[in-house]
Image (cartoon, rainbow, N blue to C red; front, side, top):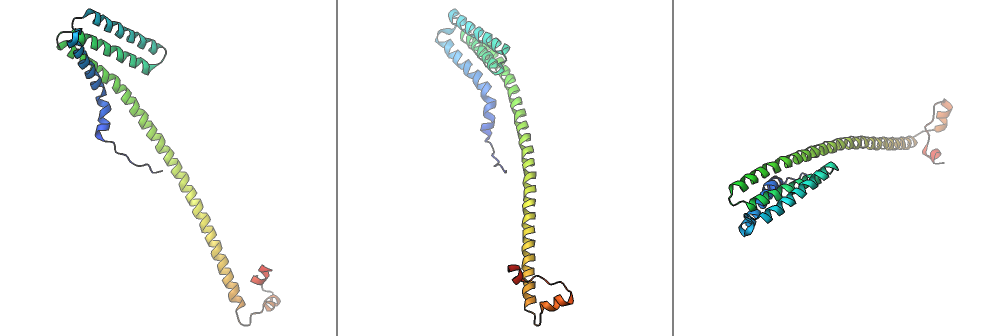
Length: 199
């Protein structure tokens, strides 16, 4: 019932929080590399990225209508990444790509915060459910322990009584001048002797 307490490393806790910034920074860096290798002011490349971003957004809208929320969010994220890459690859300066990078990073954190909050609520609900189950089973375990202890004590008392009875019968039989017939003649009840019990 006792679960080991595992302390997570701070890096393992902080790493998921950095994923949106790393993703948008990676897209910006790749787009600027693409810009330096011939995408700057290239209408064909810009048109390609526009078509891909529009297709991803349309796919996200279709998925959202069918109730696939996670897949729709993924499609929208891909669409935004393609749009950022297209603008950052086409533009000749850094201000516009950096502005779009900052906007994309903020939006990514807004969407991620919603999922993190839901995960935290699910985790708290799971912990509460597990603590209730632990409390319930701990109660059952305590009741069973009390029942077993009671049975052991009853058996111990019975054994002690049998031992004392055997000692009393032995002590009575060893008394000088003890006559069971005299007890019966006097009308007193006779204790059962071990010989009669064994017979």
